[in-house]
Length: 611
Image 1 (cartoon, helix red, strand yellow):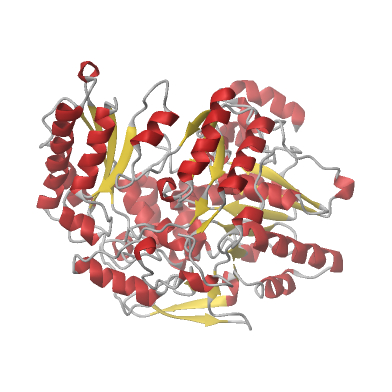
Image 2 (image 1 turned 90 degrees about the vertical axis):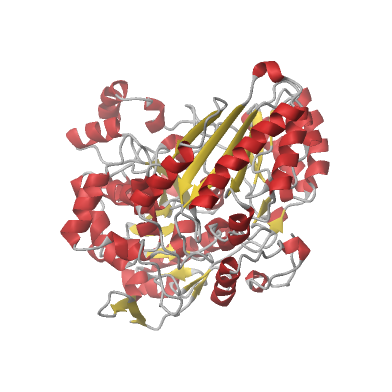
């Protein structure tokens, strides 16, 4: 295999994607290994190596005695072609051994458009696609990640799902597997046992029944297993595992820097945001722990950039104290410190000037909607005054470049709301003219609009998605009202977002569609170079599944949803109340102004809020 790879690698792009051997990768003596885990990221090396969750669980698993976790990534198209031509099976980077020889095959799934990659990677590995086709205890396929909060589209292919944060549940799962392997259990015995671990869902133990109109009728348990599955969380982040000895990639990756996770969860309640609800409750790290982890990571890896990451970093209460301590260290060691995920309502020019003493990079904000009415509908908790005041502060401080992100197709949106985006952008331009201190460089306003995708476990999980043709009409309407040369406008093509919506709210009937699409050549769907909508349309037609059933139909509030048996901590009653408040154009204050009663604190042993 190594000799064959040596011949193939000079013929493909970025061969370092496939070789392993990076600084800080973990290798073990097979004589000391009882359980081998192929940890698969269903996208390319440069995407997967940028994923913080994968770095955490790689370290967690490799800390376990007798367990060796190795990384596996999806090959780029040129490499896949060579692999198939030469019958070269998918392999793990650390050992270069074929994935099909591993005990457990784990996937982390953060994006619905990676579903085709999961099946394609199993096929490349020579592993049977369907769970029912894998008879023994070996090649046990399990998955986690945010997409596991609606696991049903992949129910035929994944043996079991791990729900929520993996630092504690993953060792529990692997320890049980270690025991099962040592004692010679069969597959069903292991699955029955693993199903009793809180946060584990085994789809083969349930049958889904449907009404004549296609809606879900009931979910029937076929074994003595739980009917409701609640995600797992880590309460004490200060003492949770953090990978300070991070693998240093041997080729450029998307986020080629060290990352520091400051807290989990979000105090906001944007009604479209799946991460904001599914990652609750808020739990933060102390500034002292973060500083130590930052220094340890930088000194071990040699990175020259570190990012403070979270869903909304500027909401971290100790941000000023942490950056005040980190900035001198970073300046002395020529390290760039970046703080993304800033909000316009708590933007600090003082902080940004400290961080960007050499060159002022662009600012990015996400108003999401152009009118105050629609921002209230989605609970953005952001006013036009706050947006313009923030821009004025930035422009007076020397910034001349701003990116603004919006959505089109949000519930209750009208043409007036669409044109409100143009109106807001022109107010930003006017603000620059009034406050800029460096007008010679000119102003660039980058505007991007995305096609609204309703997601599970949000107040908008029941909503209709507008037709692609209507989305494009609204894009053209907006574009026709951008007259200034300072504006650069981009919008997402609708086909991918339509398919994302289908997968996000899909059920088990989508499994054959995904398999058929992969058979026809679908893979790497998140990449413009490879996404082919025609393959997917043909697959839906072949399988007799109507895409509109999952998109423009919308869902009834009394309807049983395919993901209702998965609990993320936020109650369905709360989501319904938030939906009603959206249609009443009523905002819900963030967690710091008062608990809204979402229910997520019920996941904590000691009820509290770190917001």
